[in-house]
Image (cartoon, rainbow, N blue to C red):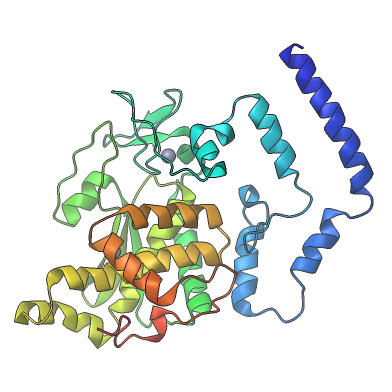
Length: 331
Ligand SMILES: [Zn+2]
Ligand SMILES: [Zn+2]
């Protein structure tokens, strides 16, 4: 049977199936049952508002998709066209084999924002040499107004969701990768592979805090970097974190351990924040990335993950490092 006929047949079968099921249990009712309107906290309302306000998020909360979406059907259709869902990685998962990605062909370009190989040669080269895949380009935070709005939202939601307060004023500045590295005293050299680099940092300037972020980021990574840097701003409010540098200078703490304490907390916080606002796929992707890393960020992340775990719902249901500003890792 030809491909077009197979697809037509397939659609006809699906259409018949959906026709009998749709009347009895509409998606609307089921999603209401999952998320009762009573007893909601400000924190969970904030998470819900984020999920509903983002079209591509499909209102997904707590890891569940609304019942009205036929994701299985969509996956089957994509399978007919040879989608990635049936790629070797997915088959390995199905048969519980460890996934070993195929070695990249020489000359493959890697997106500098999501670290995935660029498929079909579709990518943009930014003025400073960074390469961005088509998927990341679609949600880029472009203008200063959007940057400020997202920054304010993340800050407010972190206060509500983590039950914390930013006592000092924090401003935000967005600059190119080159300028960001100049400001932080490091060098940036773009390549065709993934360019490991600083994508943001927090600094104290004349007693006021400032977060400097890299421009050109897709929305989700902009949000998680903001949450990461704001965690450093929160740390700066407490003597324990201030004294870490002094302890390194005195020799009672290694610089590696200092980095694990501060960066482990910030990486834990960005992943937990993504879970809280319902960005589960992004949270999982970031988590896998940190679990693979063998530097202070990766090792620190694992220490916080072991001690605090993650709340994978729209509210915090476990103890967090934010409740222990005097010694989050009991060291
Ligand atoms: Zn990308
Ligand atoms: Zn950091």
